[in-house]
Image (cartoon, rainbow, N blue to C red; front, side, top):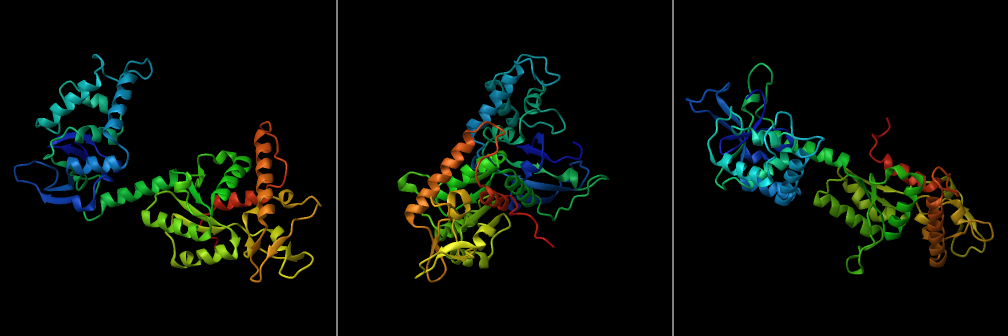
Length: 397
Protein backbone atom coordinates (compact mmCIF):
# COMPACT_ATOMS: atom_id res chain seq x y z
CA UNK A 1 0.00 0.00 0.00
CA UNK A 2 2.96 2.30 0.30
CA UNK A 3 3.70 4.73 3.06
CA UNK A 4 0.19 6.11 3.52
CA UNK A 5 -2.49 5.96 6.15
CA UNK A 6 -5.37 3.81 4.88
CA UNK A 7 -8.98 3.99 5.93
CA UNK A 8 -10.74 0.65 5.97
CA UNK A 9 -14.32 -0.33 6.65
CA UNK A 10 -14.92 -4.01 7.47
CA UNK A 11 -11.35 -4.82 6.31
CA UNK A 12 -12.05 -3.18 2.98
CA UNK A 13 -9.38 -0.66 1.96
CA UNK A 14 -11.22 2.44 0.90
CA UNK A 15 -9.07 5.53 0.56
CA UNK A 16 -5.72 6.89 1.55
CA UNK A 17 -6.19 9.00 4.64
CA UNK A 18 -5.18 12.55 5.48
CA UNK A 19 -5.26 14.75 8.54
CA UNK A 20 -8.84 15.73 7.69
CA UNK A 21 -9.89 12.14 8.28
CA UNK A 22 -7.56 11.69 11.24
CA UNK A 23 -9.24 14.67 12.92
CA UNK A 24 -12.54 12.74 12.97
CA UNK A 25 -11.11 10.19 15.42
CA UNK A 26 -10.37 10.64 19.12
CA UNK A 27 -7.41 9.62 21.23
CA UNK A 28 -9.63 7.15 23.07
CA UNK A 29 -9.82 5.24 19.78
CA UNK A 30 -6.06 4.89 19.31
CA UNK A 31 -4.89 1.27 19.09
CA UNK A 32 -1.39 -0.25 19.18
CA UNK A 33 -1.69 -4.01 18.79
CA UNK A 34 0.59 -6.91 17.82
CA UNK A 35 -0.24 -8.43 14.45
CA UNK A 36 -1.16 -12.12 14.19
CA UNK A 37 1.86 -14.19 13.17
CA UNK A 38 0.33 -15.23 9.86
CA UNK A 39 0.02 -11.63 8.63
CA UNK A 40 2.88 -10.40 6.48
CA UNK A 41 3.46 -6.70 7.06
CA UNK A 42 6.39 -4.30 7.13
CA UNK A 43 5.90 -4.03 10.87
CA UNK A 44 4.95 -6.48 13.63
CA UNK A 45 2.47 -3.99 15.07
CA UNK A 46 -0.85 -2.61 13.98
CA UNK A 47 -1.13 1.04 14.84
CA UNK A 48 -3.97 3.41 14.12
CA UNK A 49 -7.39 4.56 15.20
CA UNK A 50 -10.41 2.25 15.37
CA UNK A 51 -13.98 3.52 15.52
CA UNK A 52 -17.52 2.68 14.39
CA UNK A 53 -19.73 3.83 11.52
CA UNK A 54 -22.11 5.43 13.98
CA UNK A 55 -19.42 7.46 15.76
CA UNK A 56 -18.00 8.81 12.49
CA UNK A 57 -21.45 9.43 11.04
CA UNK A 58 -22.44 11.45 14.12
CA UNK A 59 -19.24 13.49 14.02
CA UNK A 60 -19.70 14.27 10.33
CA UNK A 61 -23.32 15.17 10.99
CA UNK A 62 -22.26 17.60 13.73
CA UNK A 63 -19.90 19.27 11.26
CA UNK A 64 -22.60 19.69 8.61
CA UNK A 65 -21.70 16.73 6.38
CA UNK A 66 -25.20 15.28 6.34
CA UNK A 67 -26.47 12.34 4.30
CA UNK A 68 -28.29 14.78 2.01
CA UNK A 69 -25.15 16.87 1.55
CA UNK A 70 -23.08 13.79 0.67
CA UNK A 71 -25.72 12.63 -1.83
CA UNK A 72 -25.80 16.12 -3.36
CA UNK A 73 -21.99 16.18 -3.67
CA UNK A 74 -22.09 12.79 -5.40
CA UNK A 75 -24.76 13.93 -7.87
CA UNK A 76 -22.81 17.10 -8.62
CA UNK A 77 -19.65 15.10 -9.32
CA UNK A 78 -21.47 12.75 -11.68
CA UNK A 79 -23.09 15.71 -13.43
CA UNK A 80 -19.60 17.02 -14.24
CA UNK A 81 -18.89 13.80 -16.16
CA UNK A 82 -21.47 14.70 -18.81
CA UNK A 83 -19.96 18.15 -19.37
CA UNK A 84 -17.18 18.84 -21.88
CA UNK A 85 -15.16 20.41 -19.10
CA UNK A 86 -14.00 18.68 -16.99
CA UNK A 87 -15.73 15.51 -18.22
CA UNK A 88 -15.08 12.09 -16.65
CA UNK A 89 -11.82 11.56 -14.78
CA UNK A 90 -8.92 10.35 -16.88
CA UNK A 91 -9.17 6.72 -17.85
CA UNK A 92 -12.93 6.30 -17.61
CA UNK A 93 -14.44 5.12 -20.90
CA UNK A 94 -17.66 3.46 -19.79
CA UNK A 95 -21.16 4.92 -19.48
CA UNK A 96 -21.75 7.58 -16.85
CA UNK A 97 -23.08 5.88 -13.71
CA UNK A 98 -26.05 7.19 -11.80
CA UNK A 99 -25.93 8.08 -8.11
CA UNK A 100 -27.93 4.94 -7.41
CA UNK A 101 -25.36 2.84 -9.30
CA UNK A 102 -22.58 4.24 -7.14
CA UNK A 103 -24.47 3.81 -3.88
CA UNK A 104 -25.33 0.21 -4.75
CA UNK A 105 -21.70 -0.49 -5.60
CA UNK A 106 -20.62 0.97 -2.24
CA UNK A 107 -23.04 -1.32 -0.39
CA UNK A 108 -21.81 -4.37 -2.29
CA UNK A 109 -18.16 -3.50 -1.80
CA UNK A 110 -18.35 -2.99 1.95
CA UNK A 111 -20.19 -6.28 2.36
CA UNK A 112 -17.46 -8.31 0.65
CA UNK A 113 -13.92 -9.07 1.91
CA UNK A 114 -11.53 -7.47 -0.53
CA UNK A 115 -7.78 -7.62 -0.51
CA UNK A 116 -6.71 -4.09 0.53
CA UNK A 117 -3.91 -4.25 -2.02
CA UNK A 118 -6.40 -4.57 -4.86
CA UNK A 119 -8.60 -1.94 -6.48
CA UNK A 120 -11.88 -1.08 -4.83
CA UNK A 121 -13.85 -2.95 -7.47
CA UNK A 122 -12.86 -4.83 -10.59
CA UNK A 123 -14.19 -2.15 -12.93
CA UNK A 124 -12.67 0.70 -10.92
CA UNK A 125 -15.95 2.63 -10.69
CA UNK A 126 -15.59 3.70 -7.07
CA UNK A 127 -11.93 4.62 -7.45
CA UNK A 128 -12.89 6.83 -10.38
CA UNK A 129 -15.90 8.41 -8.68
CA UNK A 130 -14.03 9.12 -5.46
CA UNK A 131 -10.89 10.61 -6.98
CA UNK A 132 -12.27 14.15 -7.31
CA UNK A 133 -14.54 14.14 -4.25
CA UNK A 134 -13.64 15.27 -0.76
CA UNK A 135 -12.66 12.55 1.67
CA UNK A 136 -15.30 13.72 4.14
CA UNK A 137 -18.02 13.29 1.50
CA UNK A 138 -16.71 9.85 0.56
CA UNK A 139 -16.53 8.79 4.20
CA UNK A 140 -20.12 9.88 4.79
CA UNK A 141 -21.30 7.86 1.78
CA UNK A 142 -19.44 4.84 3.11
CA UNK A 143 -20.44 4.90 6.78
CA UNK A 144 -24.09 5.45 5.85
CA UNK A 145 -23.99 2.08 4.07
CA UNK A 146 -21.72 0.15 6.40
CA UNK A 147 -23.13 -2.44 8.82
CA UNK A 148 -23.42 -1.01 12.33
CA UNK A 149 -21.20 -3.85 13.56
CA UNK A 150 -18.42 -2.95 11.13
CA UNK A 151 -15.06 -1.68 12.30
CA UNK A 152 -13.69 1.51 10.80
CA UNK A 153 -9.91 1.64 10.93
CA UNK A 154 -7.53 4.42 10.05
CA UNK A 155 -4.44 2.27 9.65
CA UNK A 156 -1.18 4.12 10.32
CA UNK A 157 0.98 0.98 10.48
CA UNK A 158 2.77 1.77 7.24
CA UNK A 159 4.12 4.95 8.83
CA UNK A 160 5.69 3.31 11.87
CA UNK A 161 8.68 1.72 10.21
CA UNK A 162 10.72 1.57 7.06
CA UNK A 163 13.28 3.97 5.75
CA UNK A 164 11.15 7.00 5.01
CA UNK A 165 8.63 7.81 7.70
CA UNK A 166 9.57 7.22 11.32
CA UNK A 167 6.32 7.73 13.23
CA UNK A 168 5.98 8.37 16.94
CA UNK A 169 3.20 6.07 18.13
CA UNK A 170 2.98 7.82 21.50
CA UNK A 171 1.95 11.13 19.98
CA UNK A 172 -1.68 12.27 20.07
CA UNK A 173 -2.11 12.22 16.31
CA UNK A 174 -5.89 12.61 16.13
CA UNK A 175 -5.97 15.32 18.78
CA UNK A 176 -3.18 17.20 17.02
CA UNK A 177 -4.99 16.91 13.67
CA UNK A 178 -8.20 18.25 15.21
CA UNK A 179 -6.30 21.13 16.83
CA UNK A 180 -4.74 21.99 13.45
CA UNK A 181 -8.20 21.88 11.88
CA UNK A 182 -9.60 24.26 14.48
CA UNK A 183 -6.65 26.59 14.03
CA UNK A 184 -7.22 26.64 10.28
CA UNK A 185 -10.91 27.30 10.92
CA UNK A 186 -10.06 30.27 13.10
CA UNK A 187 -7.69 31.64 10.51
CA UNK A 188 -10.08 31.26 7.59
CA UNK A 189 -13.40 32.08 9.26
CA UNK A 190 -14.57 35.71 9.49
CA UNK A 191 -13.18 37.70 12.40
CA UNK A 192 -16.17 38.34 14.69
CA UNK A 193 -16.54 41.62 16.56
CA UNK A 194 -18.92 41.83 19.51
CA UNK A 195 -20.07 45.32 20.49
CA UNK A 196 -22.11 46.83 23.29
CA UNK A 197 -25.28 46.96 21.24
CA UNK A 198 -27.15 47.09 17.95
CA UNK A 199 -26.34 50.72 17.21
CA UNK A 200 -22.59 50.21 17.56
CA UNK A 201 -22.70 47.15 15.30
CA UNK A 202 -24.83 48.89 12.67
CA UNK A 203 -22.78 52.08 12.52
CA UNK A 204 -19.42 50.31 12.48
CA UNK A 205 -20.59 47.92 9.76
CA UNK A 206 -21.57 50.90 7.61
CA UNK A 207 -18.34 52.71 8.43
CA UNK A 208 -16.25 49.70 7.42
CA UNK A 209 -18.04 49.56 4.05
CA UNK A 210 -16.76 53.10 3.47
CA UNK A 211 -13.26 52.98 4.94
CA UNK A 212 -12.39 49.30 4.40
CA UNK A 213 -14.81 47.90 1.79
CA UNK A 214 -12.36 45.12 0.96
CA UNK A 215 -13.02 43.54 4.37
CA UNK A 216 -16.61 42.57 3.57
CA UNK A 217 -16.97 38.89 4.44
CA UNK A 218 -13.71 38.88 6.40
CA UNK A 219 -14.73 40.98 9.43
CA UNK A 220 -18.24 40.65 10.81
CA UNK A 221 -19.90 42.69 13.55
CA UNK A 222 -22.39 40.66 15.57
CA UNK A 223 -25.90 41.53 14.38
CA UNK A 224 -28.07 42.59 17.31
CA UNK A 225 -31.04 43.42 15.09
CA UNK A 226 -33.02 40.33 16.01
CA UNK A 227 -36.77 40.00 16.63
CA UNK A 228 -37.79 41.71 19.86
CA UNK A 229 -38.38 38.39 21.63
CA UNK A 230 -34.78 37.35 21.07
CA UNK A 231 -32.96 40.68 21.09
CA UNK A 232 -29.77 40.47 23.15
CA UNK A 233 -29.28 42.76 26.10
CA UNK A 234 -27.02 45.72 25.34
CA UNK A 235 -24.32 47.51 27.33
CA UNK A 236 -20.82 46.72 28.55
CA UNK A 237 -22.00 44.22 31.19
CA UNK A 238 -23.95 42.30 28.56
CA UNK A 239 -20.89 42.38 26.28
CA UNK A 240 -18.81 40.78 29.04
CA UNK A 241 -21.45 38.05 29.45
CA UNK A 242 -21.56 37.42 25.69
CA UNK A 243 -17.77 37.15 25.47
CA UNK A 244 -17.76 34.74 28.41
CA UNK A 245 -20.45 32.65 26.70
CA UNK A 246 -18.46 32.55 23.46
CA UNK A 247 -15.39 31.35 25.37
CA UNK A 248 -17.32 28.71 27.33
CA UNK A 249 -19.07 27.47 24.18
CA UNK A 250 -15.77 26.98 22.38
CA UNK A 251 -16.64 29.27 19.47
CA UNK A 252 -14.03 28.51 16.81
CA UNK A 253 -13.82 31.95 15.21
CA UNK A 254 -11.35 34.48 16.43
CA UNK A 255 -13.44 37.17 18.06
CA UNK A 256 -13.06 40.57 19.67
CA UNK A 257 -15.20 42.12 22.38
CA UNK A 258 -15.05 45.81 21.48
CA UNK A 259 -16.37 48.23 24.10
CA UNK A 260 -16.60 51.97 24.61
CA UNK A 261 -13.52 53.76 25.89
CA UNK A 262 -15.27 54.97 29.05
CA UNK A 263 -15.32 54.21 32.76
CA UNK A 264 -18.41 51.94 32.78
CA UNK A 265 -16.97 49.76 30.01
CA UNK A 266 -13.53 49.50 31.63
CA UNK A 267 -15.15 48.55 34.93
CA UNK A 268 -17.52 46.02 33.37
CA UNK A 269 -14.72 44.22 31.52
CA UNK A 270 -12.04 44.46 34.22
CA UNK A 271 -12.86 41.06 35.77
CA UNK A 272 -12.81 39.27 32.42
CA UNK A 273 -9.51 40.88 31.45
CA UNK A 274 -7.96 39.99 34.83
CA UNK A 275 -9.12 36.38 34.51
CA UNK A 276 -7.56 36.05 31.08
CA UNK A 277 -9.00 34.92 27.76
CA UNK A 278 -7.90 32.29 25.22
CA UNK A 279 -5.58 33.21 22.39
CA UNK A 280 -8.35 33.51 19.81
CA UNK A 281 -10.13 36.21 21.82
CA UNK A 282 -9.31 39.86 22.52
CA UNK A 283 -10.98 42.33 24.89
CA UNK A 284 -10.56 45.86 23.50
CA UNK A 285 -11.85 49.41 23.88
CA UNK A 286 -12.13 52.07 21.24
CA UNK A 287 -8.67 53.60 20.81
CA UNK A 288 -7.58 56.88 22.44
CA UNK A 289 -7.78 59.89 20.12
CA UNK A 290 -6.00 63.25 20.08
CA UNK A 291 -9.43 64.86 19.66
CA UNK A 292 -10.56 63.36 22.96
CA UNK A 293 -7.45 64.53 24.82
CA UNK A 294 -8.85 68.08 24.71
CA UNK A 295 -12.58 67.83 24.23
CA UNK A 296 -15.09 70.43 25.48
CA UNK A 297 -16.99 69.08 28.47
CA UNK A 298 -19.59 70.29 30.93
CA UNK A 299 -18.67 68.96 34.39
CA UNK A 300 -21.26 69.30 37.21
CA UNK A 301 -21.85 72.98 38.00
CA UNK A 302 -19.90 74.30 34.99
CA UNK A 303 -21.49 77.22 33.16
CA UNK A 304 -19.13 77.08 30.19
CA UNK A 305 -17.35 74.20 28.40
CA UNK A 306 -14.09 72.99 29.92
CA UNK A 307 -11.48 71.20 27.82
CA UNK A 308 -10.70 67.79 29.31
CA UNK A 309 -9.08 64.46 28.40
CA UNK A 310 -11.99 62.05 28.14
CA UNK A 311 -9.96 59.12 26.75
CA UNK A 312 -10.75 56.16 29.01
CA UNK A 313 -13.43 57.98 30.96
CA UNK A 314 -16.17 59.07 28.55
CA UNK A 315 -15.13 57.77 25.11
CA UNK A 316 -18.48 56.56 23.80
CA UNK A 317 -18.97 55.65 20.13
CA UNK A 318 -20.47 59.04 19.22
CA UNK A 319 -17.07 60.64 19.83
CA UNK A 320 -15.66 58.42 17.06
CA UNK A 321 -18.10 59.40 14.32
CA UNK A 322 -16.00 62.31 13.05
CA UNK A 323 -15.37 65.94 13.90
CA UNK A 324 -17.97 66.92 11.30
CA UNK A 325 -20.64 64.87 13.09
CA UNK A 326 -19.66 66.30 16.49
CA UNK A 327 -19.87 69.91 15.28
CA UNK A 328 -23.11 71.67 16.17
CA UNK A 329 -25.04 74.35 14.23
CA UNK A 330 -22.90 77.03 15.90
CA UNK A 331 -19.74 75.57 14.34
CA UNK A 332 -18.43 74.36 17.71
CA UNK A 333 -17.96 70.84 19.03
CA UNK A 334 -21.01 69.76 21.02
CA UNK A 335 -19.96 69.68 24.71
CA UNK A 336 -19.95 66.35 26.52
CA UNK A 337 -21.84 66.13 29.80
CA UNK A 338 -19.74 64.67 32.64
CA UNK A 339 -20.76 63.37 36.03
CA UNK A 340 -18.80 63.67 39.27
CA UNK A 341 -16.82 60.51 38.47
CA UNK A 342 -15.65 61.91 35.15
CA UNK A 343 -17.81 59.59 33.04
CA UNK A 344 -20.53 60.91 30.83
CA UNK A 345 -22.14 61.19 27.45
CA UNK A 346 -24.33 63.31 25.24
CA UNK A 347 -28.00 63.98 25.96
CA UNK A 348 -30.24 61.42 24.25
CA UNK A 349 -31.49 63.98 21.72
CA UNK A 350 -27.96 64.98 20.66
CA UNK A 351 -26.82 61.36 20.64
CA UNK A 352 -29.59 60.31 18.28
CA UNK A 353 -28.98 63.32 16.02
CA UNK A 354 -25.28 62.41 15.77
CA UNK A 355 -26.04 58.79 14.90
CA UNK A 356 -28.51 59.85 12.21
CA UNK A 357 -26.05 62.37 10.80
CA UNK A 358 -23.34 59.71 10.62
CA UNK A 359 -25.64 57.27 8.84
CA UNK A 360 -26.47 59.94 6.26
CA UNK A 361 -22.74 60.53 5.83
CA UNK A 362 -22.19 56.81 5.27
CA UNK A 363 -25.09 56.57 2.82
CA UNK A 364 -23.75 59.49 0.81
CA UNK A 365 -20.27 57.98 0.66
CA UNK A 366 -21.62 54.59 -0.41
CA UNK A 367 -23.78 56.17 -3.10
CA UNK A 368 -20.88 58.14 -4.59
CA UNK A 369 -19.23 56.94 -7.83
CA UNK A 370 -16.50 54.33 -7.32
CA UNK A 371 -13.13 55.87 -6.62
CA UNK A 372 -14.59 59.01 -5.06
CA UNK A 373 -12.98 60.01 -1.78
CA UNK A 374 -15.67 60.07 0.94
CA UNK A 375 -16.43 63.49 2.36
CA UNK A 376 -16.07 64.19 6.04
CA UNK A 377 -13.83 63.03 8.87
CA UNK A 378 -13.35 59.25 8.92
CA UNK A 379 -10.13 59.15 10.96
CA UNK A 380 -11.65 57.86 14.20
CA UNK A 381 -13.70 55.01 12.72
CA UNK A 382 -10.69 54.10 10.58
CA UNK A 383 -8.66 53.89 13.78
CA UNK A 384 -11.24 51.49 15.22
CA UNK A 385 -11.15 49.22 12.16
CA UNK A 386 -7.34 49.32 12.13
CA UNK A 387 -7.29 48.34 15.81
CA UNK A 388 -9.54 45.37 14.99
CA UNK A 389 -7.30 44.32 12.10
CA UNK A 390 -4.18 44.32 14.25
CA UNK A 391 -5.74 42.95 17.43
CA UNK A 392 -3.91 39.64 17.07
CA UNK A 393 -0.51 41.04 16.15
CA UNK A 394 2.39 39.86 18.29
CA UNK A 395 3.20 42.31 21.12
CA UNK A 396 5.91 44.81 20.26
CA UNK A 397 9.31 43.98 21.73
